[in-house]
Length: 264
Image (tube, rainbow, N blue to C red; front, side, top):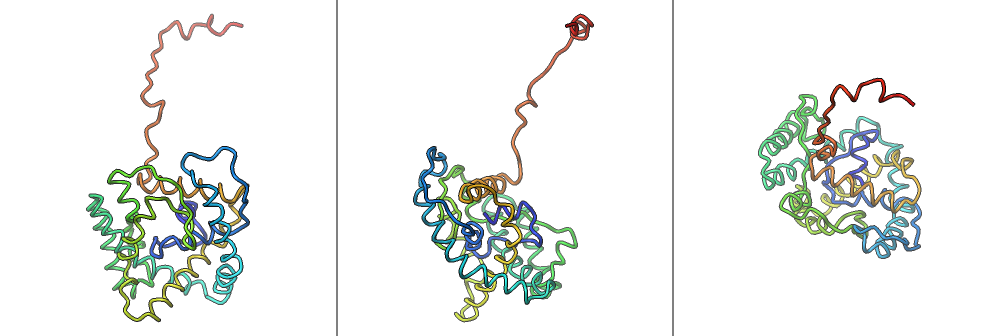
């Protein structure tokens, strides 16, 4: 779901999938979840009954714990500081993007992600400032779920994970690789690692607060469909596919434009 919110351009940029889909939960979890079974289950969501129960569980955690903390964080944190925190965690995600770009056979994107990481980690004071974007150096975010799709696992069943929120069987399979390719994983000090992880979660959740108003109708289905469409958009690198009418050829002759053809 948070991938979808990336596409709709929230008030401030969301970072990469650095902290696995935990923040997806936050919006995926935000709101009441209907427990009734869909009469016509979507083929990509064969486990809808189970998923809705997990969705409801996540919602309780978000509503009474994470969301209030995120609101407090936004209230007391100056905008420049909040932006810097987001930049810092986004910069760490460039490592994952570079590695997965290489695995997908995209050396150009890997080079851009590496350049972004080096520039922002040095000139950008550890990633707090996003000088790379100011220099118009941008890279498509990549993770191991997208890598598996490029390797052939195109279609996958929708799955809602406890705490982690919307995913698919394919993306869930890629989570261990995603976590081990994120630099925070290698911080030895448990207190520091957990504190930074918690800050990342809260910061991303705060960035999603304004987006909840976009949800309409059945929250579960809205978030599911948005997540799946966003993931497909990311896997295809934004390509929408061929225009079904582009291959059609239309031939006309003079008789098609005669006045008789327009008579009642």
